[in-house]
Length: 300
Length: 300
Image (cartoon, rainbow over all chains, first blue to last red; front, side, top):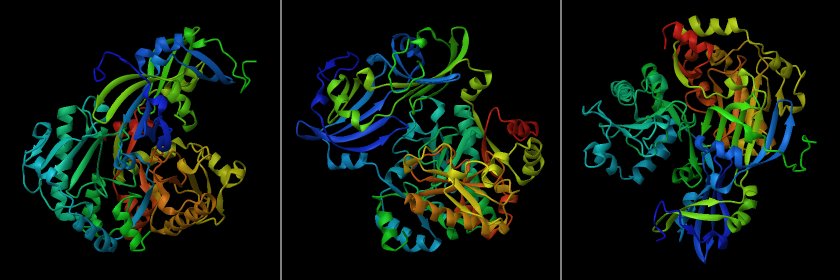
């Protein structure tokens, strides 16, 4: 049958009749492209991504390919290598029929840097968060062991300074190279960086120290290999801390969104109100509702 | 001749006799691999990188490829697409003969996060910088118009708060998507973030405002599309500021090395000695001499 895995069935080339409507997004760096189009009159999204070059394919790749010289200069030369198709596959994902939601999901979104003063937070962001009241029941399910209990790597049960440490969904846990864990506080009601004052220093110290110790014990990764930070804006408004491997360019580790926990601690030590009063900068996608709130307020 | 460009000469496949010694580095994300080996008894480095998928090749790619089904589930299905070799080339760079320096350059290096207190800076980092006395003559050549004068995008000639704005070498200037410019101060002697105090606020304000205005005028990119930051450690010790497009994941824009200029200004406004006294964190490669200095001092 068509759904069998590992049997290398020769499929009819259903893409031969695919009609491209438009390119949704494209990455020259990752060698991928997301395309919206029609497949037999149905809306479809096709995702193409070239595959990584693996060490075990090198010998065959070198012996069985054709080389076209592009440039030669001193000790440097460049070629276009034309490889046998089976050694150079393109991973192809077809979503069909695709809904408007799929198309929107894969559509590249521009981002804008927002400048949020302490007053902007009170008058724009906080009312928006409160009105949204996005459910964080899934966070409470984790804290109460109603879900994902088997995924917990470490836990400190203290209701004030305790937390649960578990792998982020983006991490497949197969190699430590792209380690990504999240510490979620047991204490409820701390929405984000903006709510932190010096009274939270014991909580932050505890997460920093015990989180690093747990990762050293479980994954043999010392703290000099870790990037420990908070997001602002966070993707959900219950305080959590990101632990990722240094050298792994995790999504959201850029200076425009991430705040090193070590810096947060220092800043609160010297100014208890640092994060309540400071102007904070963060990127928002063009379709983010919070961005429209800033536009309406004439702040962008 | 072999060096002619655009004539698509069929080269003999010199890689058929390439013998791999070891893989120097590898990126699953970027679909690239750096290999050290032997080419006719000479040391060589071969770099393979798959090419981006371009929109204009899609029609041919869809009609002329073979599809192998991997998985089908509801509206989702995945395939391995085997494309005609000429539509799916691999960019190949050969360095031969390669020196030890080449091999080291391409060798993947582990990085370590260093914690530098104000005292560490005085006792470890500053003496190291002074002893190195790496030449920054090339910076002075730019400031004095002895080199790269034609590349200057904007200049403010003021000796105290002035600067030169020009494209970073990493930017090919072909599209604004990966815009990367550098502002280099005319004022000499400011080594890095560590040297900044509130007396430099006029300089920092000037670079921030006039740099953004020049980019708006020249590239039609408003400040809400820019990430403006300093590196610590910088790659050379003469104050400069990075301007990159928001959304472009420029190398070195991670929270562990980048400091938003807007944050630097705010921090100096509330504490003139912020960057002299604060503990700063930054990554260093395993082969960086400064890292050995921190190790010798028992700080890592």
